[in-house]
Image (tube, rainbow, N blue to C red; front, side):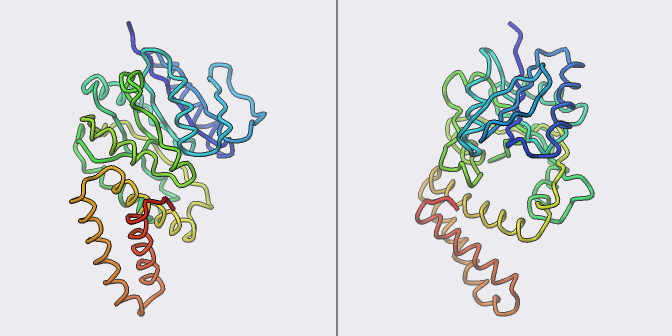
Length: 280
């Protein structure tokens, strides 16, 4: 039996790139020889927005990252593999075939591809810097974690009931990092597909420094929560030691600039998250 690739875009329905993303997916699926289905998960209030009749529309009333992704999971057909792509992304022409090729080489692994910001919105933001490391990463590299905005989850994991994004991350994000940690504990690889490239089209409000700083603080704090939930005592203690040393460093240097004081705030709050297990 041929495998199905169920491509899901989770969205609030407000991103101006949504239609471009969906139309590109329809074009790619029409040219593909694979069995491809394109779906959109509308998260939150029910929108009257009309979509192409070839798009499967799912409504998830509970607003949140995890709720939307879980709604996609439960709608994957039998013998189907789930591919997530975010509504601010535009896949390259080779994206789908690269995902499928990587999946066939490593059918037991979760597959993810790189997401690069469009040149006009590249801000030097730490997520852009992190993603730039993928440019030199060899294809098929195994990693600790990956973002679900460009990810293939093999169907056997869904059928085994191993794919559920935890609702505690609904409003904060990092639900994908938590899932990757849990899957790795069960022996599942998180593997890089170098040619499964998407371009991220960032809206203006996501380029301002206030938003970027808030996102960075949240990500680093939530990573502490993920470590606490999924790691042994040695890894937790190492995380605590690392955070503590940074708190001390930025406490000393913080008198020189507001930016350094903000760095101290990040690591203080991340230490608190590690100790109390609460997302930010």
